[in-house]
Amino acid sequence: MERERPLPEYAALTAAFGTVLGGFLLLARRRLPDRIGLVDVLGTGLASYKVGRLVAKDEVTSWVRAPVTEDPDATRPKARGVERALGELVTCPYCVGVWIASGLSYGLVLFPRQTRLVNAIFGAQAVADFLNAGFVRLREEG
Image 1 (tube, rainbow, N blue to C red):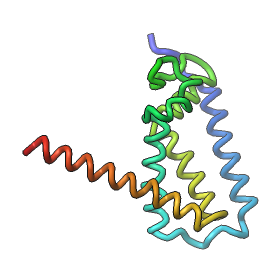
Image 2 (spheres, rainbow, N blue to C red):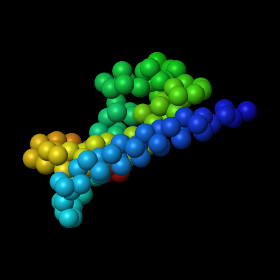
Image 3 (cartoon, rainbow, N blue to C red):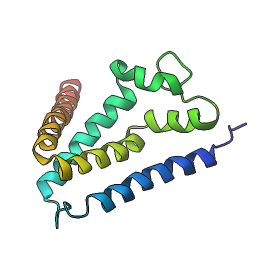
């Protein structure tokens, strides 16, 4: 039997995300750029990919997932309620990546220099991950 989905909790998370986004857009409206450059979009994308993987999958960040997961490896969300919804959020790199990309985007508006440095650090590590995966694959085939 499949566990019942925590729809009210999903709705609350969605509302929280939308409220923060709406509040940011309202409060920062005078600082919002007319456009976001491709370099910033790519940098934020690579950084949010990497940070999302770190939060959702890395052993060192299992402490973030542990309160809302039920296994020692902090990979399986708890069974019910808010803990399940939060567990599903922080164990899914795609799901938490949206929240991370939003935070990095807010940072680009409020603290562009600092955020570009953060994006460069995590973006460079994401590129290194892809290169390493390609190298491992070539060695396995050869």
